[in-house]
Image 1 (spheres, rainbow, N blue to C red):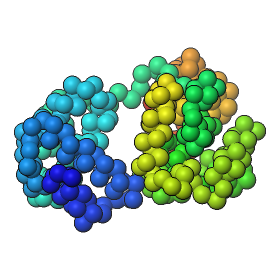
Image 2 (cartoon, one colour; image 1 turned 45 degrees about the vertical axis):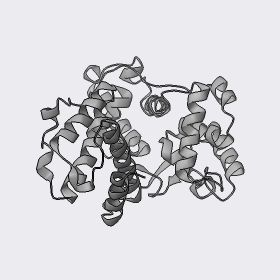
Image 3 (cartoon, helix red, strand yellow; image 1 turned 180 degrees about the vertical axis):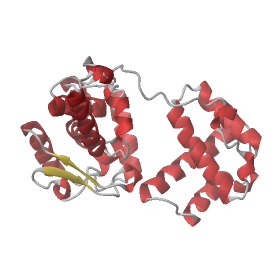
Length: 288
C-alpha cells in the first residue's frame, strides 16, 4: 500500500465522524483519491501534502470522465473533510462553482424507471446477487441495503424494517409489504439467507459488493438505480390513482387543489419509503 493510502486510512480511523456507513464510504472515496493522485503523477505524497493543484487535477479528471455532478460534489465533500482534519481548509475553494462544478439537475420529467427482467436474472450466476436485485425491484432498496439486509430480521409481517447500519445516512426505516409478489421475494430471500444477510459467510461486504458489480456488468444489468425509480412511480400511481409526471401523468401545475394535496401526501410517503429526508427529492424519481 502506498504511503498516502495508508495515511488517509489512519486519518479516517482516528476521526470517526458520522455513521458507520458514512465512515466506510469516506474511506473508500479517499482511497480512490489517493490512487488517482498517484496515476496523475503525484508520487510520495503524505496526508499533509494536499495542495490546490491536487484538488484541481482531481476535479479535471472527474469531469473528463463524465461523472454526475452529484458524485463529484460528494467527492469534494470528502476532500474538504480531509483538508479540515489536516488544518488546510484553505487549499480548497469554499464554492464548487470555482471549479466549474454545476448544480445537480433534479427535475427532468424524463423517466429513469427500469424494470428488472427475467432475462437479466437468468444471466446472473450468483444467487445472492440475483436476490439483492429482486429485493431492490420489489422494495426500492439501495444497492448496499439490498446486500446487507438480513431478511429474517427485517420481516415484520406487514412491513420490511431496515436497520440504521444498513442504510445511507444511518436512518432506519420501514417499507410496507403490499402485495403477494413482495411477500414471495422476501420469503425466498429468507430461505436463501437463513438467519444471516445476503452476504455469503465466506465473504466480506466489500467482496460481495464487488461480486455484485461484476455479475451485473457481465449480465448487462446496467442502471440498476432505475429499480428505485420504478418503485417510486408504481407507488405514486397506487397512492394517487394517476401516473407520475415522469411516467406521462399530469404535471403538478395542472392538478386541482385536492389533487395537489394527494400529490404532496404521496410524495411524502414515497420519500420516507425510499429513505430520503426531503419530499423535494422525489422530483428526481417522479418528475414535477
